[in-house]
Image 1 (cartoon, helix red, strand yellow):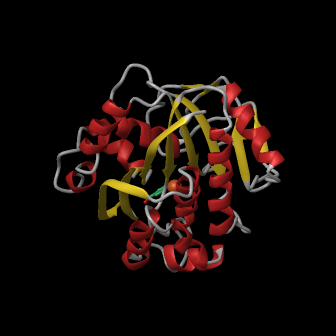
Image 2 (tube, helix red, strand yellow):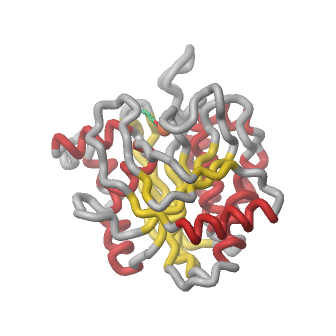
Length: 280
Ligand code: DHB
Ligand code: FE
């Protein structure tokens, strides 16, 4: 059985990558955001995960509006990064863990989640930036990746309830895995933001704090809203909170302890947050 050591959650704003390239981490604009990461890095150095199961959304790199899986699980031996248009550097490739991916896929389908399986998958800023924040400047990523993509882009979106259930099914899959890998769960994106339309620039600290306050001990509280209500509350890109909800589900049903949390408005157009949870 895999050992689930904790959950790492962070925003994935592309501008973070630009700040890293320019060495702007300690400037007045960026410092309040980057200040969230030293405690996470210290914890990771001690916790030494072997595998990260990362829930994120694809931003048009693998899937476009013509073919949009609701849930897609990677089963590749390697995941290359590509920039879908932000002008970011191309980040290091990730080693996959195909055997664990296929175990998760098999378990999910038996659990009646009709997922898409991807033997080829690119990863965009939603994966690379959280890892660059966690392990800045390493020569090789110290973990293997099992990526799970959730549609947060095109109507109709999965509900928070369904995303939590998906995560819990991933948790059960990890529990029935024969290996003894140390698994970190990761959810990326959010918190509230809206990049386009009449409400561009919309953020909602009240809803963000509701999510942050309930994720550790009472994640079911986040399932009282429909996907449409989350778009209203969090903004049309703030629905990336669905990735966090699924990742929380993958930590299982027991309450979690909050190791560290940071919340700062704004980074680019986003209410940015980082959070680390571990079993009580
Ligand atoms: C921004 C945030 C995102 O989550 C994203 O994918 C792209 C841009 C932003 O605030 O600039
Ligand atoms: Fe995004």
